Structures are given as structure tokens and as C-alpha cells.
Amino acid sequence: MYSMEQLTHVLSAISHPTRRAIIKRLANGPAGFLDLAEPFDVALNAVTKHLKLLERAGLIEREKQGREVLISLRPEALRLVSVWVHEYERFWSEKLDRFAGYFKQQNRSK
Image (cartoon, rainbow, N blue to C red; front, side, top):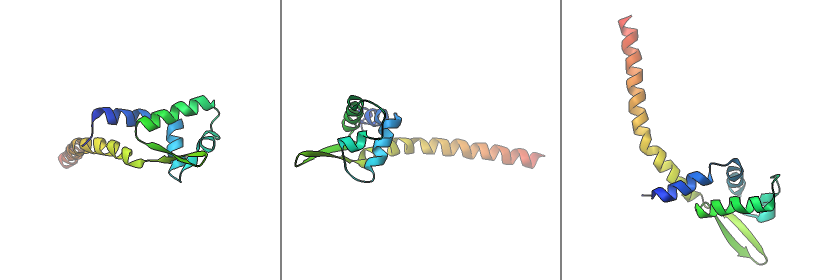
């Protein structure tokens, strides 16, 4: 079960291409802030804001290791999106089945 607020945070977090690129990078393993920021042609402050949104959504976590802070992906939060989309899968499957049935009926009539 999920709350709509949690789902809203995750959907908001993944709505921006930069945040999706950060998620993709972190899927390969933890990274430091500067490593994450390097490929983007934006101010470090902008990257910080993106990371805060990802953290609020529960998609990343920070862990201090010595003097460095490593940022890791927490992909479990993406399951909220999967669960929400799956709720509508039945709806679309029924609609598409009826649509296919309509065309089969039309072909038989010809």
C-alpha cells in the first residue's frame, strides 16, 4: 500500500530529465556529489536542489564515509509508480480487448 503523497513525491522526482539521469548513474553504484554533478552543465546549487527532491521522494540516501558523503540509489521507492500504473493496467487491458473484439467482429461482417 502507498500514500498519494509518497507517490506524488516520486512522480515529481522522476519528472525531470536531470533527476532521471542521476537515478540512472546511481543505478551503477554510489557516487560522491561532484561525480554526480560533473556531467551536467548547471550550477552546483541546481544539482543540490535535484538531490533534495530525490531524497524527499526516498529515491536516494546519503552516507558519510570519512570526509566524503556517498549518495546511493534506493530503488524501492520506484515500486510505488509500478503499483500505481498496475492498478490501471486492468482498465486498459479490458478496453483494448473490447477494441480488438470490435475489429474482429467488423472483419467477420465483411
